[in-house]
Image (cartoon, rainbow, N blue to C red):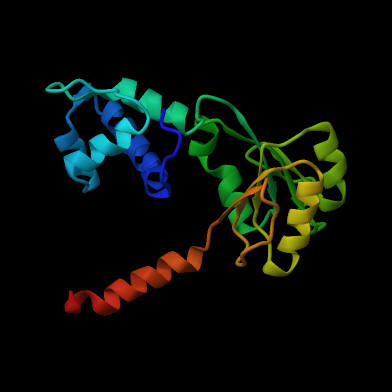
Amino acid sequence: MAGYVSDAVIRRLPGYYRHLRELEAAGVTQISSQELGRRMQLTPSQIRQDINCFGGFGRQGYGYKVSELKGHIGDILGLDRIHRVIIVGAGNIGAAVANYPTFSREGFETQAIFDVEESKIGKTMNGVTVRHMDDLEEYLAANPADIAVLALPAGVAQDTLDRLYESGVRAVWNFAPTDLNHSDDMIVVNVHLSDSLQILSYRMAHRDQD
């Protein structure tokens, strides 16, 4: 595997995995870079360059075995292991993450959910009980988490991130509508839902100019 892989290639990996999973489900066993490129709107050379970053998985003239390539990309994405997940915030976004079936199938298992609203404490989401935020540190001391999902208002997100860091969490999927300050040894991926809508709005407004 290459020592350095660009962010652009990394961002395309989930797309490869998704398309290959769909092909496998449809009974396709072999695919060329040309065919995969057409599905993903990429050139065949881009497909080959991306995949070659991680080793040669295809055969010239034969293309790629779908299930084999899907397995390799799943391993590269870390989907060959279980990721212990906690969700902080049991509102609409937190509930959507907790109830999304694909996450558990791909190894992202929600272990606990936390909130401050008394009416939510003790309720379950997809079989997981909602706990009070006051129990966060004690829970993490006994049950280390690999990933924390932040589904909180912006005003409390930074303090919560700091608490998670002090409790040993080093990877955060942040849905709070703000970018957060964090240590270099913590990975934070920010998801700004409004950004996608604004991009869609821009493209709608300018589509006649293209």
